[in-house]
Amino acid sequence: MGTERRAAMRVPAQIYLTQYVDDEPHRCFSVNLSASGVYLNKLIEPMSRRSSIVQVELPIPGGDTIWAKGDVMYDTFDPYFHSMGVRLTSMARTHKRLLFEYVHELYMDGLRRMMQDLRAGIRRKRPWSPRD
Image (tube, rainbow, N blue to C red; front, side):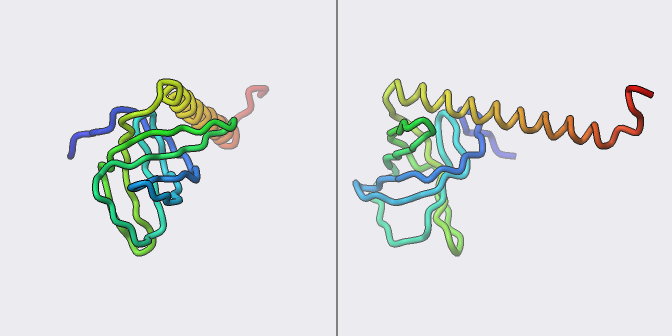
């Protein structure tokens, strides 16, 4: 098995964002997000990229927008989408904190949902009642 290269945990996050390649905007949709990167999809369209460096404009709930520079670490194509993993390498300290807090919030929400589902499943499958 390969070595894990990610520096931070990823959480599912479906967010429309804008990626700038050589100052040209491209609409994308995130698949997952971490404090240090984003995996995104965009429709296949003609595009030339002279370097692996891109800019990302990522709106988060509450009206804030995170701006970051990143390196494309993974690039792949399927019949419909151009998918890429972008490691975020440079952003303002405030944006870094906002992104960390947002990812943490998504992670905690996921844990809460998972625990609720587990509790609901246990209640449904319990063959006895605590009042018996």
